[in-house]
Length: 184
Image (cartoon, rainbow, N blue to C red):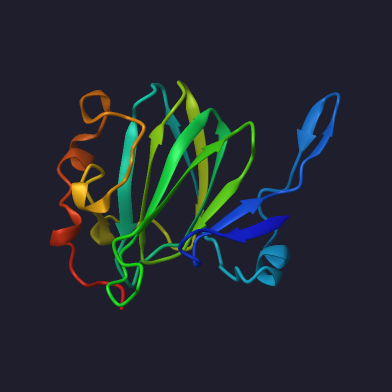
């Protein structure tokens, strides 16, 4: 397993080792001891799956507020996504900045997003399946979000706003400027 820091150092890009032969491949998507040795001593408590039928589906940017904040470990099992994490920690020198990258089933990389970041993605291929682990349980009363198309974020989404497929909830999320100071 290879672990590299992204432009915001707390966000990690993880490349699991794949064992490939004529049948396909095998890899460990999570190994608690190896993650801890790499400085990612996070206790994951919930696994989630998101399946998007169409290119252009946008999910996020979501986060949970303390005491139910979540770190996430994201990877794509089928298809590809443009994955984004936005720093919501106002005291951070990278507040409001983001890390964005393509994650795909074919290349197999994982993204670790710590607590204090909003996370979302745009689907690049039909029938994309995303798996992710969270360090806290889903809590509707602690769930929040940032509008994906907020120009203040400066995200170069590969999906135009008129082709984005959003849930009603995600379409109504407030911009970064309306987010309270939740992550000291």
